[in-house]
Length: 262
Image 1 (tube, rainbow, N blue to C red):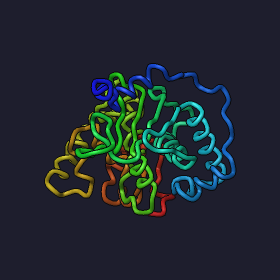
Image 2 (image 1 turned 45 degrees about the vertical axis):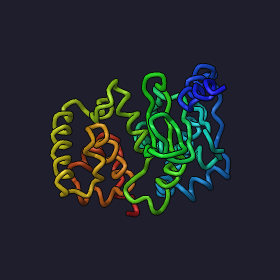
Image 3 (image 1 turned 90 degrees about the vertical axis):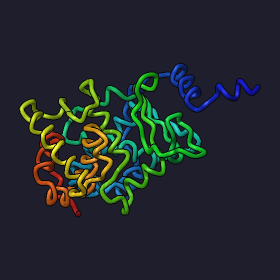
Image 4 (image 1 turned 180 degrees about the horizontal axis):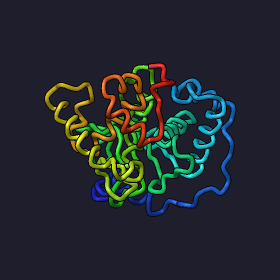
């Protein structure tokens, strides 16, 4: 019995889940309900600021994501708002691309809170808010439910865990999670972007930048962290980092500062 309990770790259970999971995707995409639109309007500022026609396009992209990507709670129940916030985290970075689909994602697992590298969400040494899977977890994303909600709250500041992880997926879509989004960025911008990244990382390390210090971890984390800032506080980001803002506005095909409320 003790051996069986040892084997049934969260990581092992996830492997079993991935083996037996039916990956068939629904053929029909339903429209969002009035209640779902109300939840978006109450909880997602990006959606609030869109013009009516753009709101419809946003809703259609949300509906398509919900039809294609399976979501499940692990150790927690999930509801309509959870699903809409995950979908919004996915849609916001690619809203400038009409036909974008996350071909490298099939499942999103929501944990109640932070977790560790063994996917355990109880006990000590839990400091992970979100993770894009690799190896046997390829095609999966794990998110802290509490961090997901915090990212869309009025107190989120410049951080949004959901957007952060989906930007990692965008980065990964060209085959390498390296902070250089080759599928989004024109080839001639690659070298200037790398130079800009390293210059700003030096400033962060020296305490001369307001960007989250986690950005100096590596180039991939830098890209994800500054993207959070870009989408959460576009006006402030443009004011503090005009060159970075322009580069990201071109990459994401979105110029948010002119319409943002902050």
